[in-house]
Length: 339
Ligand SMILES: *Cc1c(COP(=O)(O)O)cnc(C)c1O
Ligand code: SF4
Image (tube, rainbow, N blue to C red; front, side):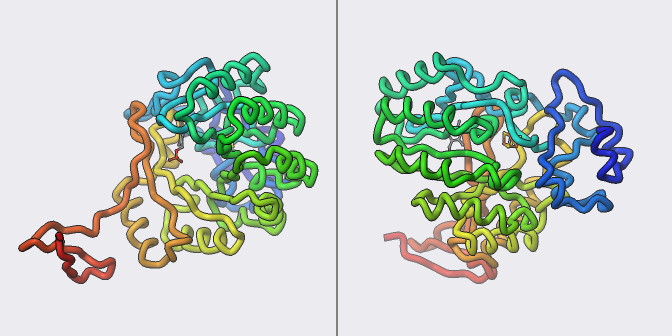
C-alpha cells in the first residue's frame, strides 16, 4: 500500500484495507497501473485491483468456496464438477490479483505450479475418464508459468488424451500483454492433436488497449479462438452502456463474448455484487441492443456447487389454444403453434 500511495491518490476506504494471512495479495502490473487514472477514485480499472476495507468483511451468505469446488476435487487441483469437462488448477499465482477473484480460497496462496506428481495424477485421471471431452487449464493464471513449465503440463495431458479440447484460461492479455510472445504461440501450435481455446477476462473497454488486442490476435491468428468471460461488477461495468461498448469492441477484436457472470457469494467481495434484478434488467437491455454474436450468456454459478445456470428472462408467456404465447423484446405479443 505504501508503494501504491506514491502513484495513486488513495482514498480512506483503500487505506483502510488490512493485509492478513487470508487476504488476496496486493499486486498490480506496471502496465495495468499505467492505464489507471491516479486521481479518479472511481476508475473502473482501479476498482478491480486496489483493495478496500470492504474486503475484510464477510457478509450474509458469503463463504470462501461457494461453488463447493473442494467437494468436487480429486487431489488439490483437479475439479470434476460437470461430467464431460474438468478444471485443472495449474498454479495459484497471478501476475496481478483481481479484488473480485472468486477462487480466492486457492489463488495467491503461494503454493506455485502443480508438481510433476500432481500433473501425472491428473493425466491418469483423464485417461481413466473417457467421458471428459474438455479440460480448463486454469488457476491462478497459467501464464505465470514459464513456457517450458506450461508445455510440459500440456504434453502430459495431450499424451494421456490426444483429442481432449484444452481451454487456456488466462487474464495475461489484459494485465501483461507482453507475456504473449511469438515463442509461446509457436510452442502451443506444436500440440496440434486437438483444439485450444483462449478464455480471457476483459471487464471494461479501457482494458482493450492496442497491446491487449494484439496479444489476443496472436492466439487467433494461430487458429486458437478467443472467448471472453466478464464478471458483472458494481462500479466497473454495471450498466447496459458499459457492456454494450465492451461487447461490440470485443467482437471487433475477434473475441467472442461468452459469459457475463453474476458475482459469486465469495467472502470479501460484497462491494462488487450487483443485485440480480438489476443484472437481469441489464441482460434484457443488452439483448435488444447487441447482435447474437456480441451477446454473452449472463450466468450464475449457483451456491453450494449447484453449477452454472443462465439468467435470462423468458420470452414465453404460456400456452393458449394450442398456441405458445411469446412476448417480443419490444413488448408485443406473438403466437406460435404447439404442433
Ligand atoms: C465453469 C466451469 C466449467 C466450464 O463450464 P462451461 O459452462 O462449459 O463453460 C468446468 N468446470 C468447472 C469446475 C467450472 O467452474
Ligand atoms: S487472474 Fe483470475 S485467478 Fe487471478 S486473481 Fe484474477 S480472477 Fe483470480
